[in-house]
Length: 145
Image 1: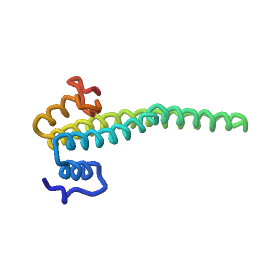
Image 2: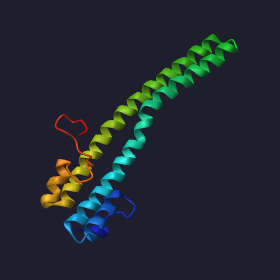
Image 3: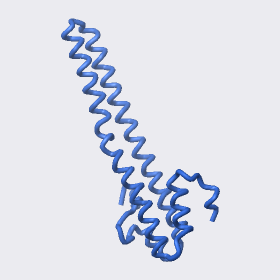
Image 4: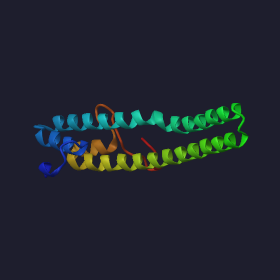
């Protein structure tokens, strides 16, 4: 295994080192579970922003439009509201793209785990039935397991 060629600060490099240093299949499965738990936590931490981005943009546009209306500028208020709506639409589009990229990352992580795990542990890792229950895989419909 080419552990020395992986970047030290990536999760792939960390996983490769931990799997290479494991002395048994249980230790290897434990290292894989820990790495998958870390990846899942980072995905889950970003999910709160998925719903917040369009709302923040829309509310920012409404706030700017309100200020413009108070100051007596109807045209500026309409422009501010329009900018907020466009920003919210862009945020929603970027959120959809981020979910697509997350699904691709989950699939690649599962492929890497199955490569590192090998044998029976690899079959368990691909099936998402490891002892801690962590799985980054996708079901056949392309959704999360």
